[in-house]
Amino acid sequence: MTEPREQLLALLVRYTGDPRRLHDEIVALDPDVRGIETTAFGGRFEPMAPLLDAARWLISRGTDDRLRLLGLKLLDGAAEPGDVQDIVSLARAPALSRFAVRVLLRVPGAERTAIQLAEDAGERHLVIRPLITHPDPWIADWVRAHCGDGSVARRVAEAHDLLALLDQFDVPDRLWDQAGRLLHGMSRTHGYSVLHEYPDAVAACRRWVALAHLRPPTPERLVALTAFADEVATGYAALVLGDQRVDLVAAMKEVASAWIEELGPADPWAALRVAALDVPPSGFAVRVVTSPPGPVSAAEARVVIDGVPIAARVFGCWRADSPEQLIPRLAATAEPREIVLDENDNEELRVTIVREGDEVAWRDWKCLFDRRLPGDFRFDAAAYDREVARVTNDHSWEWPARTVARLVTERLRADPSILGRWECGDGFCWSTFESPDLAEFRFADAHGRYRLGIDVAGREPEVVADEVIAGLATDPRK
Image 1 (cartoon, helix red, strand yellow):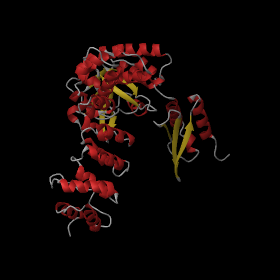
Image 2: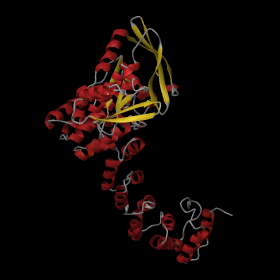
Image 3: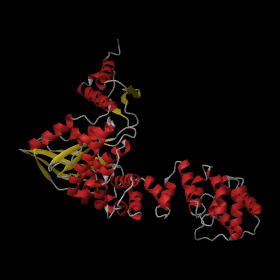
Image 4: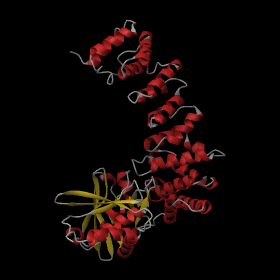
């Protein structure tokens, strides 16, 4: 017996013009009306007028969501403005919303309705790609404001001629904000970066920065400028902009500092990031960078050598490893040590570090992406040690719960007997990215694994850490 979807196609091909009979025949094929979800009509046949009328009948009177889905599939590309209301009514059903939006996008004049339905469903991505080249100025504005990251941002920048928009005599604030999101979306290291694929990347970045001082400051604009400045200074954008980023970062820091002064008490994250913002000099450098709170920043330790962010160069994407993971590995000794400098998607970037007299050597790089690996490096040992000590002792980037997590973890490592008296193995305290005021302590014994939430809200992190350690240090037998 043929598959249900093949039987369904056979029924459609020989349709005689009675939609109710078609409905009953489809139901009779299988009690669950199987095969409709996986049936595609492209290349099999083109529904003619009678079948399109049947599609409209199924949409308005079908007894099952899958039958109504069949009506939508048949009408895809052939729907007319008069069908919009019936299609909108189907879009409220979760099982039909995605395909209803798709059908609406192909109805002239129904694009804004499709956008609204996609927004209501929390699935803007359904409409962004199909509308990238739409000529309606309102739709073009909406796409620029919601396009997201990566290749979609690049396609929008190219299709809308972002550089030409920025070269206008009078660039509206909203357009400047949108351009910043596009540039950041192409360059950010939380996914595959495509800034290098955008032909006008350097010119667009320079023009966007040149226009920054003309904008009235807002907290959101300050955060956007600061986040992009970090990517230009030590993220993937640094690879694209090269030496030009020195002037660009200086200009962005100047504007951001002026905005902070004008706004008054600014976003704590932005204030800290602007104060720390710089382009590392030649040689070995580490910069701890936190992303904008959303609601809590993610932290990464970026190793920059001679102006090149190494993790961004090798992986071309994602975040560098966290400070807690990376910084303790960087100490150089006379005994060669192979360390993991970064890890992404289960692929490790390894390098051997060894102190040789008054120099520290980094050599023998290993990674799957071998064509992107840097060559060997030699650093002045005293300068190297100063940089490792500086980044080890600099905790200005931490949020409260992250500080508690670090202090608790350090004290447990320094005194293994604290958990040993509980007959527990290693414990680990960390701060989740969901809340700046909550740390989580995990430990295990022979009977299981345990988790303890630590509330830091409104309290000094050092005091909270002292209380946690004091509680763990209490003899359980007393």
